Each structure stands twice: as C-alpha cells, then as structure tokens.
Image 1 (cartoon, rainbow, N blue to C red):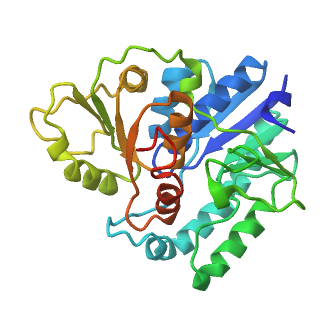
Image 2: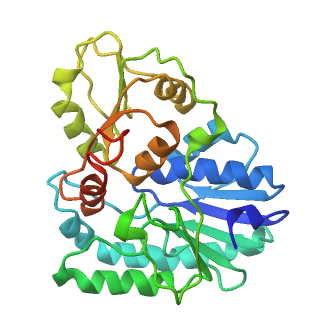
Length: 309
C-alpha cells in the first residue's frame, strides 16, 4: 500500500520529536492525505502543534508527549541516547497504551508513526515511516540495529521515504525483500508551492535540529552573515548577533524566504535533502558532529549533486 491508495479513512498520525525535520516532512504527507478525503487526527506535542496549525488549522489535534531526548552538544549521540534508555523504554510502553486509547476514541482505521516506535496499534493496521531501514552504527553497536529491526516488525508495513534505487538515503534506505515495505519517494512541505524562478534573497541559513547543535552551526557561520541579503531561520532559543536579519517565527513566512533564496546553508538532515530534491536550490550543508546519519548523508551527496555544493 502506498499513500496514494489511502482514501476515505480515519487516520491517526504522529511525528518523532527529534528537531523539526519529522514535522516538516509530515506536512507534505498530511496534505496529500487530506486531499484524498481522509479524516486525520494528529498526535503531537505543543511545539509541533504550533507549526502544524499554520498549515492545517482544521485538523483534529491531540496532545502527545515526545520522547525524553537530552542532548549536550558534544557530538556523542550514542552516549546521550544510552543515558535516556530507561525513561525512553517507559515512554514507549505508555505510548502503546495511549495509541490504543486514541484508536478507540476516534474510531481510527489506520495508524501512521513517523519513526515513533511505540505509536502502534494491535487493533488496526499500523505503518512505520522512515528513511533509515538500516541504522549507521559501528560494528560494536550491532545490538542497536537489531533492536531497531525488532521494533519495526511490530508494524504491518514500512513506508520508506526514498526512491526505489535509494538515491537520496543510500544504504540507509536499502531494505530486505522479506518485509512489507513500500518506497513512497521523498516528501517535502514545499510540494504545496510553486517554486519561483526569480530569487530575491542571496542566502538563507536554516538552523535546525537540537538547539545546542543549532547554536553551534550559527556560531560557525557568523562570518558568512555580512550581506544585507542574508537571512537566518532559527528557533527563539537560538542566540543571534545584533544586526543579523532573522525571519518571522511563522513557518509559512519562512517558506517564502526559502523559496526565494539563491543559496541555502543548513545541516545535512534528510528532510533538508528531500526539500532540496524538490527545490533544486544550490546549498552548502554541514553534518552535525557525531550524528552518523547526517555524516553519512553528507559523504553520500557532497560534490555529487549539483544542488549539494
């Protein structure tokens, strides 16, 4: 089953709370589901809800707690995740119970989890969205890969946000043939817009991901922020030097700036790569130190695609 086949159903969906990349890519998917006459219930935390409301003011929303991530900014993602393994395990247990209650409350036909392992139901079909069927782990972390595989097996099907030739995620999205999986292609919130031919902003710097790593990227790029035609997109938690143009907190207004940019500077997150696949805007990307997924994607694309310079 692909997203285009999902019509006239009651859908419960929730994105992972790891930065806002999962929110961004879910906007494109939810837009498609709405267009296909589905009734969508969106389970998210308060920060995610603020963004989704800009695009979907008429959806049914329910408050849904995120996972207990705690990043220190030292590039040791593995250690940081291990440090929260116990509260994360407890959160997954609670999430499964919460999901079942929501399925009953809203008479749900289909559950869609964007990389939320506990957002699964035994009552109705459940789909897991990812671009990482295989995690970029070291040999001594093979147990992490096995747990990832076991958790995905709870779901009836996996939707992989990539092409069948895995051109965007590379080895990360290569899935074995014995699982129920569908390559659904890239998803971007910019699919709702017409990309303008005329560019009016020289550079847009997008600060994304966990706040502490976003601050590091901005601090590294300060020397590039000398032109009046440079703008910064960042959350309120990011400290920005006086005199630097910052864009509105409104995501839709930020979208206009990104569409109008001649060049984009950002992290090499997968949602960004999917956006660039649609926008075809020249970009300079930087992986977050220690985040192997971004480091892998950077190595995969750097200097290969015209729009990944």
